[in-house]
Every structure is written in C-alpha cells, then in structure tokens.
Image (cartoon, rainbow, N blue to C red; front, top):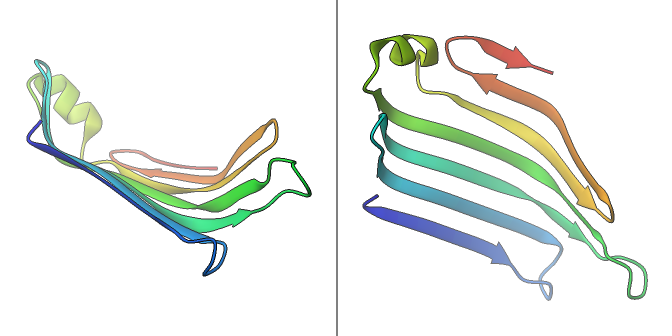
Length: 110
C-alpha cells in the first residue's frame, strides 16, 4: 500500500449533513494487486431525544479500480472492476442496508 486517505466532514453548528471519503492506494497482496479502493458517502445525522442515540442516514458508493489478479481464472470471474452503491440507515440496535447495487461481471441489485 502506497497511501490511504480518510476525509470526514461534519459540523453540527452548520447542520446535520455529513460527507466521508476513504481510499486506499496501490494495495498489493500475493494473489492480487488493486490500484485503488474507494468508499464515499454522504447523508445526515439525526440526534436522538434527550440522551438517546440518534440515527445516521445516507448513501454510499464503493469501487475497486485497476484490479490485477495473479490467477487468470480469478481475473475472469471478477471481470471489469467492481463498483456499486447502497442506502444506509444506522440507529439504536439497527443497521439497514437497502438498494444494494453491485456491478462487475455479473450485476446484482436488490
């Protein structure tokens, strides 16, 4: 790995919106090299009542770019670089992922 970035943007004084970006550059493993892994998201933080935990809502996108598996069969199975998105809702005792989309050699939605 040649680098990693983590960027978070949230200011409660300005509002309830948030933005985030996480990226890893040049990840090298014995079985695969990946030029970049990226996760980005944005949404809102909803404060709970009193001391109760609130809720995080948002959308996320993810991508793996410049994938180079060492095994030709794995390269064929992965196909084009995978990427996708999802809607996220996280609150007290719940994590909900909806509208999952994953694009690659096969497209999965649901």
